[in-house]
Image 1 (spheres, rainbow, N blue to C red):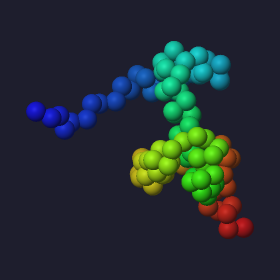
Image 2 (tube, rainbow, N blue to C red):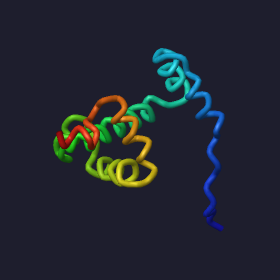
Image 3 (spheres, rainbow, N blue to C red):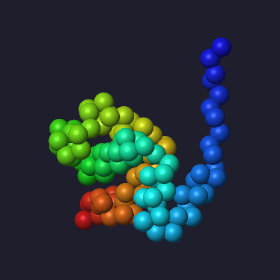
Length: 106
C-alpha cells in the first residue's frame, strides 16, 4: 500500500542550522551533513533561483550553472512560483542579489 502521508520535518535540524555561528562552521556543518554531490546540487539550485529572479533566460542560466533545462524549470516551479518559494525569494532579495519590486520601477 502506498503511503500518502508526509513525514514530519526534523525541527532540531533547522534549529541547529539557525544556531551556526559563522560561515566556517556553516560550511563544515553542511560538509558533514551532505555528500559533495548533494551540496553541489543545492548550490546549483540556489544559483539558478538567483538568475531566474534576475530575469535571465534559460540558455544563459544553463551556460552559467550547468543546470539542465529540467532543473531550471523545477526551480522556477517549486521554489519561485509556489508559496514555498516565498522564503527563497525573500532571502535572495535580502542578500541584495537582485532588485526588489520597488527598486525595479524607479
